[in-house]
Length: 100
Length: 172
Image (cartoon, rainbow over all chains, first blue to last red; front, side, top):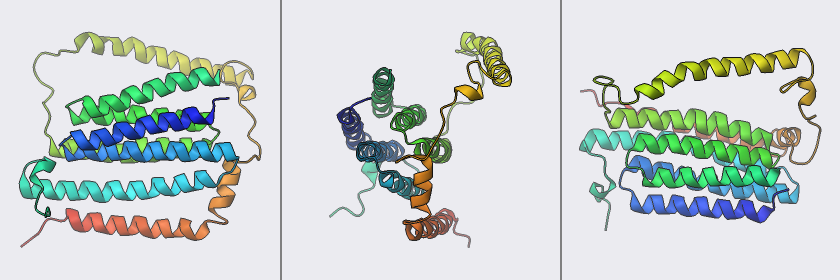
């Protein structure tokens, strides 16, 4: 058996890589994919904890996270496409309209 | 055995995540993310969460990544398939590899017909009722969490309507 700490460690590494991706990249699509990476890392930690506690509730929770992620991706990509139609450029540095 | 699988999959997962962040081309990033999601699906299998492993492949690697690749294709026009082919040797490799895959499938099918063999039905593990198994997930999902389960369908419907509204061109 693989110790539970290995899974949480891997999950932490993947989450950190996702955070770095959001911070360093300028293409909104890549930023979005990094967010998916973070969601996946959190899911992995959840399933590992649920497996450690021998309960299926964690898997149900992860299932709901997946559903919400699917809805989020659809809406987010629609927003990105709408912005691209308006601006003709794809860089988050241009999108400072709502900045204080 | 399980530890070895975990280590290999973990290394591939971290490498593909790093490649997603470091590669400049977003389409390469999307493909590396598919690799990463597949690795996480394997880890779910290792943890005994068969249902989530399947859902991961179907929802994430299937539906969500298709959406991503589609958006990348629409927003970032790529090069056409013209001119000299830089990957000619790789493409020539494809035919023997395809034949090899066919051979593999034939072997597995033949094995399952004769009972034993590599992919025979006898070699599949028996799935029983256990904590965290696919049956207990189903009971929870359609039992204790039935309300939340139904609410997600409304959420998906709302997302669908929202996307249609956002994507509609203003027609004057």
